[in-house]
Length: 163
Image (cartoon, rainbow, N blue to C red; front, side, top):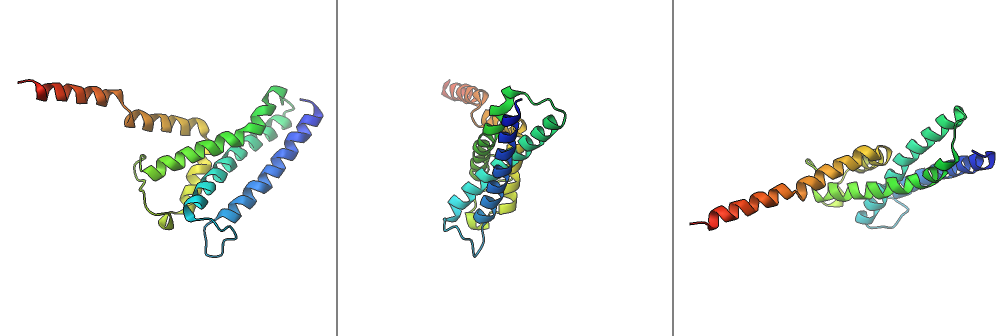
């Protein structure tokens, strides 16, 4: 990877770290929060920023490891720039699934009773471990929209309709 591109990515990673951590502090729910947003929006943004932070941890670790071994490849430059966007979108999806109660143990309580640490942790982990989070979402979607259940319902209806 050209030296200029390495420096650009390193500068981007540094700026991203500062902006994500600052955003988390500003969005954190509390009595004297400087951000005048309703709690629903604040938690949604908190989930997005936490997901980006999780992806940031993954990309920064990867960059440092590959730079240290002097094996950075130019073809991965886009991955470094776009990874936080993938993590934030995935975290938002995970947040929606959690709030909808589609994962066991989740409830649709009012945002006043939500634990910001739990939301931030799950969303950051989903950004950091996007492959595993995507697999879990695939499982949830498979259960919610199962073809087998529809076939079972059709069979039950046919049995009830028959004399």
